[in-house]
Image (cartoon, rainbow, N blue to C red; front, top):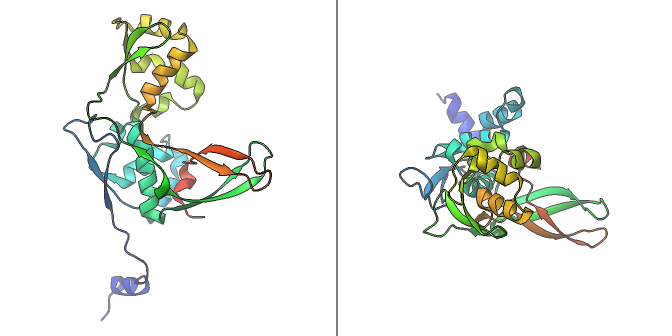
Length: 240
């Protein structure tokens, strides 16, 4: 007698197997205890999609929830942003394929364009082998060294918007010109030239590395060429 699971497998037999994949991280695992150069990524399954729909009932960031559900081999709270965006892409790929279809409003004429592109075409920049966390940078305007640590998933609550990021920059600066006092660092940051604050932010986010999220597209209506950010929200993990 055929059991229920055999019947289920028979009905779903035409669907390609959704297997987890092993991916090499842009960070090369340099910033994780013991070194974790690669992790396993699995698709967002039925239970995961239900959890994502109900995430508003908790205080958890939906993107961080997806990481917990789909990434194995690393404490997801410890993931740096250099790896986070890359892993979001890989979760989307293994769940629904490399083609992404989404809408974007042209900033020039407000026309809603349908954007379809292959995510395999996006560039991923790995970090250099000698990069460390925290990293020392030179503040260009005041010409003083600063030691800055990378943002991690656990830091998401401090970077919800631009105001939060600016208010919490001091949390990610270990020292400025050798000074380690939190009070001094906070006061210095508030009085830094804009170019120096930008240098700190770029170090915090690891902006030079990982997934390049800028996409160049032409508006179908006004033909203006726009550069937009890859739309990574909870909707990114569902098919349209």
